Image 1 (cartoon, rainbow, N blue to C red):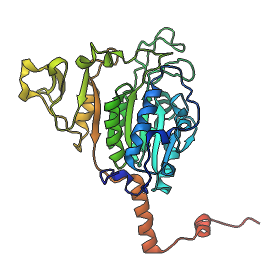
Image 2 (image 1 turned 90 degrees about the vertical axis):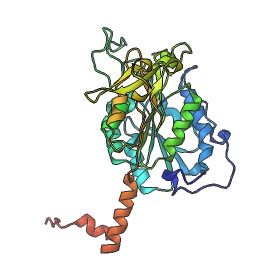
Image 3 (image 1 turned 30 degrees about the horizontal axis):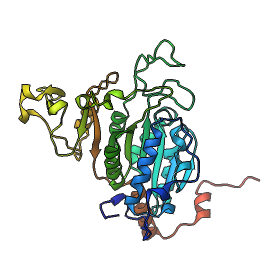
Image 4 (image 1 turned 180 degrees about the vertical axis):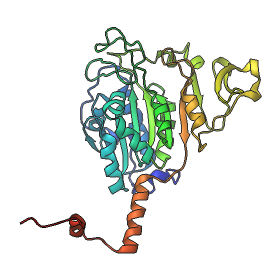
Length: 350
């Protein structure tokens, strides 16, 4: 644990050496064999010892869905809450308990359908939460209905003729809600996921990490182009702050800005290296990050960016709440609960 983990500055450290094994609970992990959730669970358990925190100061809160079983499998405090409401419950905990590291586990259905409003308000408020959104583009727990991230034309049990909905792009949604940290990673890329989690943990405020996660029962292979050795380098755009945005075989592709201010993917050989723009995750204006999030083709996954899209500094909601309360107490003194409850609009009924 170092001071770089600004979001954890108020969380007590432990002198006891903790390993990944210490974060494994005694509960049998019950996901379908081959589910991408296993990989995410393993990565999180392996990463957490880096934080140097006692297990009792870490909390996992989930909503409803396959991903939401996560707290059972973590040997920390946790809560399996109600559908879509995990960010709201976690907000209350974050405001009242700055001594905790709080992680929200959710899925694309849980967070973007019934939980949509709870998610966007947590993001705009910048509550000190780390939200891991498992996106498999399907409702897995309820056996394969289309979800808010399912692509148009998706044939499922609830859309037998194909979905006519225009799908959500979770990264675009988060950036539109002025989230201060937004990232995307893939369940099977252990190294990349760990680095993204590391940066999310260091962030003060809400950090949303979308994780492309395979549901091998109801939507198997949804992200194969990003995983297959023969295609992944050609379609996956790895964003690194301060570095030119290049990808493809031999870095032959890049992102440039057009005369009208938009961005597009080009062959570097056609425009020259100087025309390729660099990624700026710390830009106050989320415009470039948003534009990058729109490059991906939702059907073929061509030009899909992964990594940290945005990471800017803004005081967290819970810190501002605590500062406001301290300021009021300093100016007005400690309040009286009964007077607050009575207010100025009470009367007696005889």
